Length: 241
Ligand code: ZN
Image (cartoon, rainbow, N blue to C red):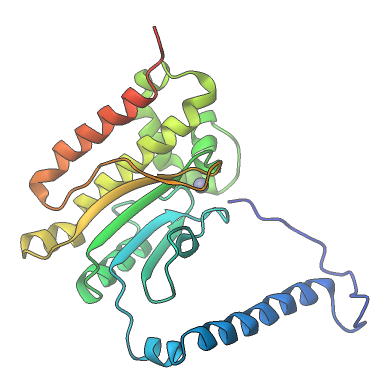
């Protein structure tokens, strides 16, 4: 969630007319050319097929953190994963950006799974837990602070080094539950459309995704799924007596 600012006035060595930043961007464009050529040579017609349609089965709602790139983590190609990312993977009922992505994914693309994905050691969650002053984004992560306040008593029992990750997982559960409560998902379930909401957490330290088992495929299933998943998180972080 943090931007690496670099000076933009420095001139490039090889091309005096080009700034270093331009050279860095040229690297990206060169990478892209190579990637497109390799993809097309591995699967001839790949891009012309994508042009005609996209039929992803999954909507990924994850954190904007650069260490959690959605497609790469699950080894999916362009066209296979619809993605929305924001700081701390928050699903807010009044966020038209997230709701629009969800609505398009569910109503038009007919995704079968919505996966809310948090990650360990999330900077947004950490800022929410420790009241860090990080500027404008503090207003956004108030939503994560709501989660912290909701579970404050239990969080206080978790050993300090693990408290951030515990809140990362609680945040996934709350945001997945929020996803279940959106009009988009509620309407889909009401008309009998099959769409299942999940909550996962990604380990920055080992590259592995873990299912938190808040898995709900109908309005009736949400409360039980939430309670089961919450009990799972609490038992994993239980402090030995
Ligand atoms: Zn994060």
